[in-house]
Image (cartoon, rainbow, N blue to C red; front, top):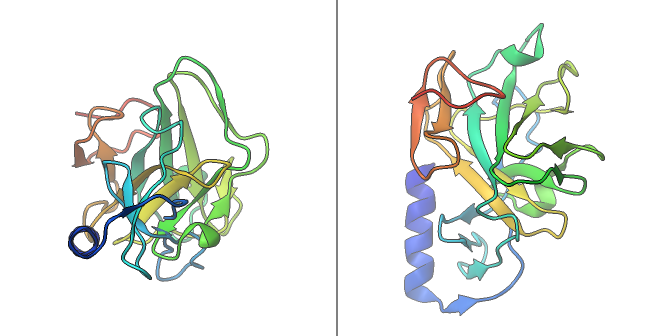
Amino acid sequence: MRAFFLALLTISLVGCGTETTSSTADATSDTTATDTATGDASGSDGTSTDAATNDVIVADSPWKGVLFVNEVNAGGSKTPTVAIDADWFELYNVGTTELDLTGCKVGGITNGLAGADPLPAGTKIPASGFLVVYYNHMNLGVPVLDAGIKSDGSMGLWDKDGLMVDFADWDEGASPANSTWSRTPDGSATWKTVTPPTPGKPNSK
């Protein structure tokens, strides 16, 4: 999945000039779950690649560099009895103020913003704090989305104006059972497989 996004971005940069439009992104489901999170690949420099047109899209959210997709658990149980055993991902707010995420959307980065799921109205993340978003069909956790996270996939976050805030993508095996794909340290550009998972807490080293 990561190699695919890098190859696609390389093709875009060679074949097209920079074009300013609205950004899009991909959240995908587990093979046994309904895919409700989808979109286009976005680069760490704020550019993203539209898979349909190969245009480079520049449209950063004001929250870029403040709010991060920080940890992903893609190896959760598909029949959990408690929320933490399900698929989930974690957001991290490095800022000094609480953020209201009403109107924000999350999803994979292959089918775009249109395929992403809105976070429930009133969802907030504290200053210098974490928010865990659960994915399961059992309605376990708050907030919870009725879906799963693919073991080889991606997770994007868009703000209320549809601008890309942040994203993560990972290959098969990066988030096995009882381990997560995590920014280490929190909010950094370095990703690694971490054991044990640390939902709602600083990531393990």
